[in-house]
Image (cartoon, rainbow, N blue to C red; front, side, top):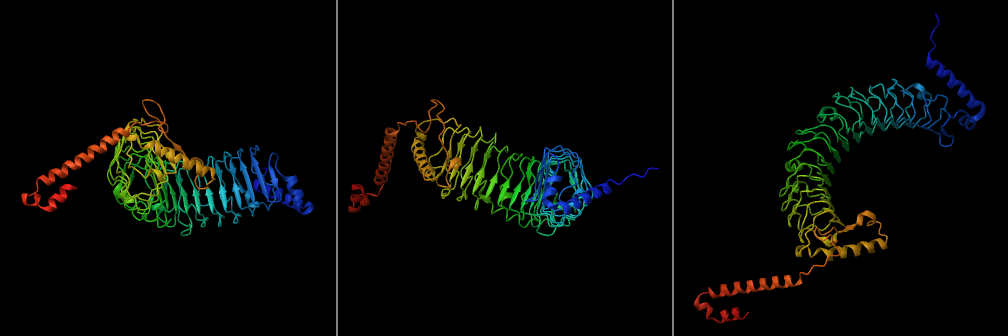
Length: 491
């Protein structure tokens, strides 16, 4: 009976032969001699790059002192134990190689590694033995694979990991202790977007008290229950776009006092979850775009306004009006985007806070606006303004706009000439829009409204005088004959 040869023993023999070559010829000669075909080997920085090199197996005759390997767009199906011979590796990128499996303990001797990327492969199964040996790894990325489940203690042997990217897999479940074993406060960024999670995995995420960013967009999560994120003490970014969210419990965001950025775009929210937003008073940025809002009611954003700097309400196809005081309290807003709401015809003159003085950028493009109040915002403080794509009705109600547009454009040109680093390029665009009937730019249109304004003012004065005379005629007779009365009427 012929005894089957151990493939790993063969690899060890090859490695020992390669090691002997180093001793005989020195490291420089080795790298030149042993560099795989169609790869690039940098013997100074100890980097091997094999991109579209046609590799069908992982090279196993490389310099054992290598610090970085980049194998991308090749065709080897397994991450095997070859990496054990490269114990000095710090960064490994094995993306887009049609890998379907990772051998248990493939990284057993890679304790120095801090970055591991396996993006865009076909890996369906991982276990806690997958990351065995990665005691100092900081970044693990398996974005774009076929993983369906996260088992118990998956990252037990990668306790210092700070960023995990599992986006664009097929994850539909995870063990309640999937993240147990990661040192407290170490994991800062977790990407789980575009998977098949039907609810926020509250129990599995419970140990991650130091998490700063949680990305859950693209999962079919229809309901946010009470205390869904209560265990996060340091969360600053929460992204839940495209989750089909239709219901947000009033206590859903309980405990998120540190949250700065919230994205709830492209969901099924029929109204702004104002009560729930009371739990995130320190929010700086909120995206509520592409939700089926019909109106933004008074005080809709007030609970979250005290620190708010950026607001995006775009692509809401059913939105028809923004009512008075909808943004009451949002005095610190700097960037506002209300665009591509085709049914939006009305923004109340008092929709924004009257004390707002920090607004730099206002995008009102591609709505259904025919008019806009002159008192809506402090126009002359703007550095960027987009009014394009609206069916503007160019009557005297818009007569204030050309002067504002000219002034802003002049300021923008002056700043560009001065090469102001803070105001340049797209950040200081001034786009006027056009009159719906004539097609003329709002920048160029000439309004003949002075006579109308003069007459209107005269009418107002006459009305005031008539009121004064009426009031004086109703005074008691003894008062009307007095000197004070004559003095009053003489005015």
